[in-house]
Image (cartoon, rainbow, N blue to C red; front, side, top):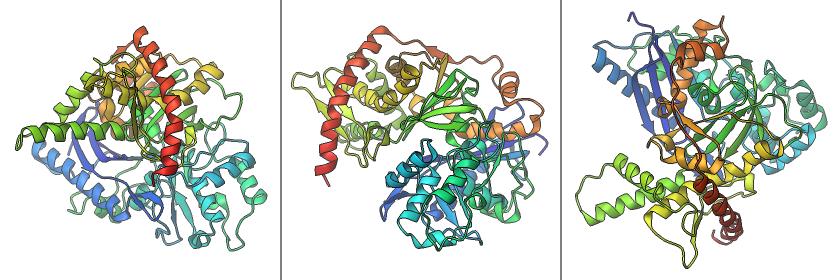
Length: 524
């Protein structure tokens, strides 16, 4: 294989995706595997066997596509990168065995630990961060805690199994435990506060700094594919060991790379099962905000992150309902799901600016930004509301953006942070123009979508794998001069009617949170 190829792998909430790119960073083959989280024993999780079965199926589909296209098998690669949904908790013992089920970012059972840590550190520790899960396990008196030798995120876990290296890229590491300014290491004063200022079980004989993954920066080499790792990734035996890996990253960091939004005053919004905004700052915020996470870009710049657990799940449920209705009307007809999405998303643009007197709360799980530890999806309408497909779809889109809007106002209004550019990416932007236009109105800021937006984090981590060969240049320069040179994307400006309509919708949304709280309390 003469051409240089780089493999990007991302574990998303509903899909595992692989992208193979060439020397000019264009995708030459892709693979995909659909999966779903499960609520088991009180936790949102993905089973460890599902992780490996999904990865192997996803890689197999990519390798098959590549062989069909080029007439050769994939034997080696110039680099591999791993990305996954950030945060969560995977503890392992000294032999590398999992000590507990993988606890994902979606879990909201860490409130006690997050509150104690935030107060002790004087720094916001979100419910989903790994340190919150660890300390909650300590508070709960969970037996596995005494045997911990290593904790990590999903990306760090898969990377460790494939390379034997206990490392994380700085962006993902900053959601495991707070990092120092610049991101080179974990915050020492906070580690000291954890170990000496908090009540810990007498059975614990480990030091926090010894069980955290080592931090690496973009461009660093993070190990190579081992023989055992090659067999895990490609059971056919075609893929050979020795391939270099870049540092594993979270989906937030790879989203920033995929949208070229890693410089100050730029931001990106990823919209899928969850929704989050990443805003690159010129300076630190003036105070702690519980709704804002302080993380970093893959090269260590400070980032204000607004993360919401709920976004497109309820929207997807309604699309499936309309699809089932169509199949019931015409039994046996083949319904193109992509076409259903295109038609319904486009219908949202025909809805009234405020949603026609409808309101929705899309919470399937807890939502820390508004103080919910559980969710009950709601659609509410006034008696004289215009209940039609266009207004329903617009309302569902608005509800997907509403909680994000509340969190971002801490940055854009209270802190007066200027954002020049917002880039959108993720599955919601697959239908051209729909989500983009409505998001521009909701945030009252221009929203740009690149041609590569649907490739998402798998493409972003593949770019970071390629960046290992360009370490002499900054990541900004690499992206601007090589990857995105000449690309501008499609930008949609906010329309006054959409801006005013969303403000009116938000008044109804705020009122409906009282209904949501009653539904959570009463509907068990």
